Image 1: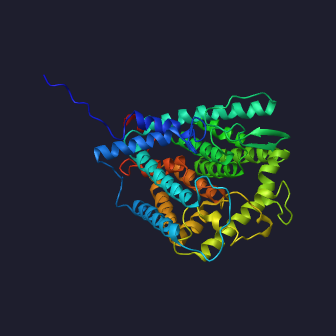
Image 2: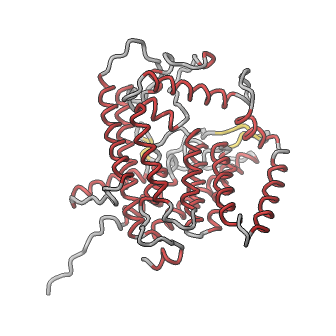
Image 3: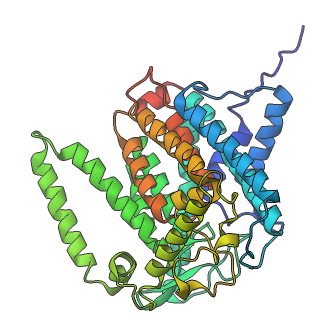
Length: 431
C-alpha cells in the first residue's frame, strides 16, 4: 500500500502562524545582528524560500488597479534608489553617523520595502483562506505585547526594576509626563510605533468582534504617550459610533455617547500630562522652542524640508532613505541646523515625496485610494474607518515600511467581494 503523500499548504502553515503571532514584537524578542532581526522577518524569509521551492506565488486580484499601482510604486522606488546610488549632487551632503554607510542604508531600506510587500502578499493570501485562524493568532500575540507594555509602564511609574525582553535596549524609550519618567515603547523601539500598532490591533479586534481585546488595545495606547495614535483612536471611534448611532432608531444612544465623550474630554483636559500630549503638541506656538513646543516645531520643520527636497527633485526624488543626506541643503527652519544624527521627515507622505518624487507619491496614493474602495466590502465599516484613521496618522508617522502596516493592507486586500458581509461567525464558519 502506498503511503499517503503530505500536501504542503503554502499559505497555511506553522511558519505563517509564527509570522502573525510575532508581528507585535518589533524590538523585543529580536536577534541583534547590527540591526534587530525580528521573528516575523525570519518567518517571511522562510516563506519566501518556500515560494521559490514551490515556484508558486499568488497575488490576489493581480489585475485590479490597486495591485497594479502598488507594483508600479515598488518598481519605481527601485528605479529611484538605483539612479540615486550613482547620481552626483552639486552640494555637500549632511553628515551623520550611519549604521552601514549611506548607500548601503538606502539598499537596506529598499530591501525592507520589498520584505513589507512580501508581508502584504502573505497576509492577503493567508487571511483570504483562513481569516479567523490567523487574525486570532495576531490578536493573541498583540494582547501579550499590550500586557507587557502595561508592565513596563506601571513598573517605571512606581519606580521598581523591570525585566526587559531579549533584543531590547538597556535603556528603552521613555517620556517625562505626569511628573514621572515612564517607559513608553512597549515591544517596539518607539512609542509612536507601539501606539499605531495598538490602534491597528484594536481595529482588527473590533472587526472580528473581540471587543474585550479591542478595549485592552485602545486603553494600552495611553502607555505609549503617542499623540498621533491618540488622535487616530479619537478619529476611528468618532467615525465608528457616528455610523452606528447617528440615525433615527439610535439617535438617543448617539446623544448619550456624545455626552459621555464630551465629559471625558473635559476631565482629561484638566490633567497637565494630557494637555502636554495633545494640546501642546498640536496647538502650541512654535515661535519659541521650549520643551513643550519642540515636538511640533521639529515636525513642522522636517515636513517643510521634505517638501523642499521633493520640489527640487520632483520626478524620481533623492532615493529611499536618503532624505537625511539633503537635509541641510533644503532646511526650512535654521533653528534645526545642528542635527548630528539621521533625521527623518516624520510624515509618510512627505517621506515618499522627497525620496521617490511626485511620481512615487502619486502611485502610492492611487494604491491607498483603491484599497479604500475595496474596504467598502466590509459592511461593518470597521476596516474602512480604521484605514481612514491610519492614513491620517501617516501625516505624523516616521515610516511606511513597518510590517504591521502592510499586514493591515493585506487584510483589506483579502476581502472577498462574493462575501460582502463578514462577521466572527461567518469567518469561523468559512474555516
